[in-house]
Image (cartoon, rainbow, N blue to C red; front, side):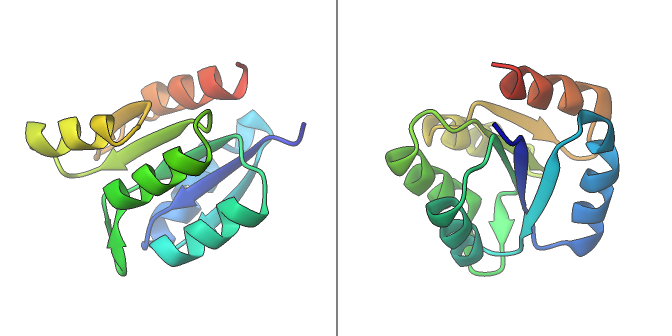
Amino acid sequence: MNRRILIVDDSEDHFELMKFVFADLRCEVVSAKSVSEAEVLVNNESFSVVLMDISLHDGSGIDLCRKLRESNPLLPIIFNSGYSQQRIIDEAIDAGANAYLLKPTDFDELIAIVSSHLNG
């Protein structure tokens, strides 16, 4: 299986950083800058992990997580966001997220979590 990570974040700089961070994992890293773009990609392509932010230009990562979870119950979904309020973290987990990591990101922790989902 081709290992692919979908990064859902409206920041091009964040996407470029994630490509660098995941370079050693030998995965294809794909970008979606919006909820609508992420939905199209997940419905038409296969991904090993989705890494997303909460706030996107055209909607909420939490709403996207719920939609993805309905159609892809086993797809690992990890949030990486600056929102640190416990209520938002709880809402993301309740929506189906496998993990929630705060920005600024601990890259060792991020790599470990993503790797654990890539390797089963």
